[in-house]
Length: 197
Image (cartoon, rainbow, N blue to C red; front, top):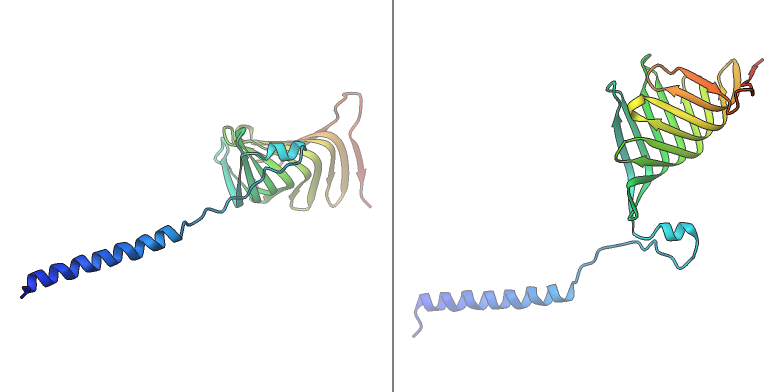
């Protein structure tokens, strides 16, 4: 007759064998998966070539802290990092904001932006718009320089507020004081201004 200890050992070995067979089968059947999006298309366009080796993120937020401890926050719907340029993050539907010295909020939006990880500077393009209080500035491009607390705008600058419309080629906006200087590429050209009625 088999002793109780031997019966317990046989029972344990039997349970272990069944467990190994059961889990071994399910592990071999369920390989698992990692979802990856292939951005490498067979088109020969510059964009598809640039997207080889791309990492994509959704609902991103980046914070920069200027030399006067001013926080500059940038959010985006999507962001891409390309294998051939890992220090640049391309942001889609970029929305940035910061609090100025007078406690008002400066908003900067664009359809696309490039966030440079090593300097935390940001280049905005394609639909650049800056809003603060009752003023709006539009431009072709804008560059935020973290260490200078400045935004440099270029190309078809239009500044509007409740009383004025001012047009120029280049503008520099201080992100602490909200001081704005508008100028032209050529010194002989003049900035165009018009008072609203």
